[in-house]
Image (tube, rainbow over all chains, first blue to last red; front, side):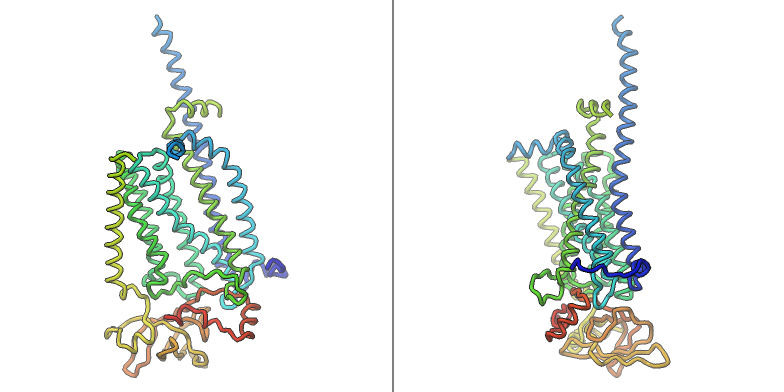
Length: 72
Length: 247
Length: 153
């Protein structure tokens, strides 16, 4: 099963027995699919955290500004 | 058991548990994906008819098989939403739909690229396997647009849940289309350990590794998206605010 | 479970069941129209209405392929091992078009009973073999046709 690498040279590997376009485009598509659906959620998480931190700090600043006024 | 069920519905509990599990899931996924792709590109022997174009099929079969899990998953989550009103279930269902659309699209694209050389056609409208898979893609786009079309998020969740439950019928049709009707698409391959089986272990072990890898990828991607959803929907909760401050 | 939850679950189950029943009945009614192709036996039994244009599917009979020397014309016989239908085609054949392998042809029957195809597609079976395994199986007397889904239909 794992006894042989099917190719003897790198160009033969790229050529895929004449199915280079089909094989490589499928594996390329597969790579894009995997990467996109892992990195897009990760990037979105950073955006969400950034946005919420900004809001939180803003509302805290607003509270601080209001608090002394309320005490008086 | 009911306590466990109620706990699972708590977004906070899910967020903490998934934090612990994610590294393991990602690790296993990375290993299996690498093994599957390297095996597929370097070691998999050519098919006696198709030559190396059969290497497309281990990717196609893994993604296609996994894509059938989306409607059942969304239907289970939808039933939980409708009956028990569990917040987490709807968060999972909402994020499953776009991921499922990706899976269906990749299934169609990779199948088409294989068919163009093997069958001599990119697409056949008369093949029930091909058309039912395309229908799944459009159904998922339908679920996504239904949710964005309804402004009341509670109503949107219920409508999507119902559509997901009904959509499961199509999964059965996709699965059995190749047996019920004459199709250009081949039936699923039998897995057998007998030495005179036409599908030797060199083909189905590689395919099996790829299927496991793709299922793990589904889990990782869906968990990541669900965690984002939790951060947004639970942004008023004290634990989320604490978490945001720590970042 | 609380009663209102039981009721909701029952409603969902009812909707799911009735939709499945509706889908099942539709499929049953359409079952012939959903078939992509007819087998030579179905054609021999007259199951094909006097359609001008339809598809036929079967195996390419071993030794039946005659390719023209100076054009893309090709004649072959498709079979389901019960009945045969001769096919005439002019055009480029797909990679997997081989004798003893599945084929789907689109076209119409001529008055002489020859199917004149406008399109020929190769149908792959569900078996994948490395050339070594194939050679070993042939030596053992097994042929891939024995395993093929097409021959069972």
